[in-house]
Length: 137
Image 1 (spheres, helix red, strand yellow):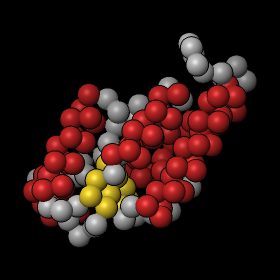
Image 2 (spheres, one colour; image 1 turned 180 degrees about the vertical axis):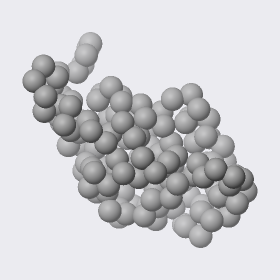
Image 3 (cartoon, rainbow, N blue to C red; image 1 turned 60 degrees about the vertical axis):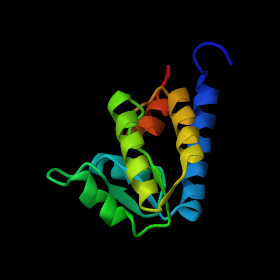
Image 4 (cartoon, helix red, strand yellow; image 1 turned 90 degrees about the vertical axis):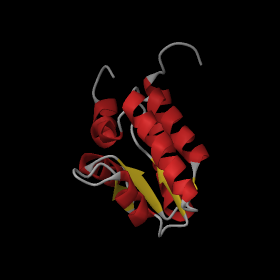
């Protein structure tokens, strides 16, 4: 595919993303996101699994990781911008040191689908379906 994805390609990417989130419900114990708006976006796309928020004001990384160490396997879905990637690397390193398996392939798959949709922040998925249904999109 070259250039900007067509509307049909974007709709397929959205369907693939919804399917991937359904798979995540059975693959990982929890999805780790940055904030409450990310949780809302995942729920609107049908994700019903456990979601943990990692950007709680006043919560140190050590305390956050301690709370997440109870899970055997997680996927870190921080945003796909510079800060989100940095946070993903830091959390992944800390979680793996605690023996938590961090699912990296699924994160990359989500990132590719989001890029096809022109979305790099998880919370922006909240209304992507409505935008795709608008004329001219």
